[in-house]
Length: 318
Image 1: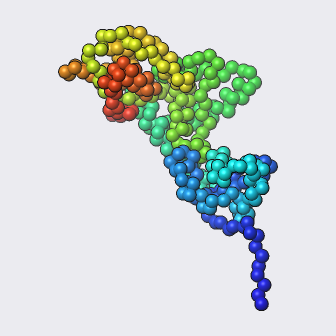
Image 2: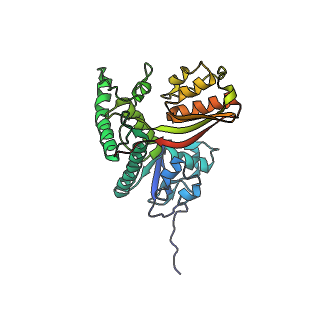
Image 3: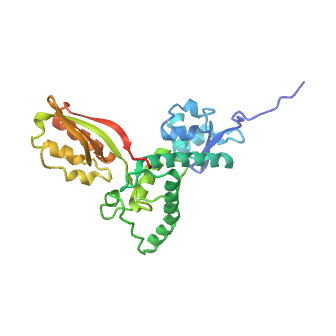
């Protein structure tokens, strides 16, 4: 009579997986995920755990197929913590384990996305022309290579290099004493391309390795003509966020409704009165868009509107 082979009841074999590993409570926990799904989950593009996980379990070792005992999970994460919450914590905070070839391809993909986003949002402040992704890449490489040196100098208490002041956004990005200058240390695979592109833009605007400023939004603003000459009632709101344009809004606290609206517009393309409505088309800093929308809504009680005609207005090179 054949003798059965004893296998541990908590042993599961998995292959061709991406691992996410988190050390907690002196134990190392792992989850087995589908390739490329972890970044999608972290960026918010994917929210269904079933589409991320190869198996709905937490492991001590995926390679050995050893699942984590319930007592280990309770000790590390709390006795009443549901399994899904444990898995989500590992997904968000854990270190992703991938092969060298896959890691390189992943890094290249995110790197390319970051460059494309930045190149589409920044322009030369004088010519208003876009930079190529190659020029943006060189500028970011320069910031990346200087970053470690600047941090080293800062740690020793010596003065860091003073950023150049090319570009209108530089003064705004560095406004306020005691604020640290934005830095750039390179692309990573643990953050979304969009969030890293924003960090890259802040660093480029602050340090100006090449002259840059944000591309402007092209908007159509419509407002009842009858209230244009009235004194503005809505004060600019401060939401506590460190926005490069918050301080500018404080300067728009007085004047007529028309004055305040035009104060947000950097360049007027056209303005006209049709019937009972006044309409202006112009270019606005992306950072001022929210404040403008709130002002129009407050002053017109819903009768005015702000329409986005172009998200990022740039001028291509000849």
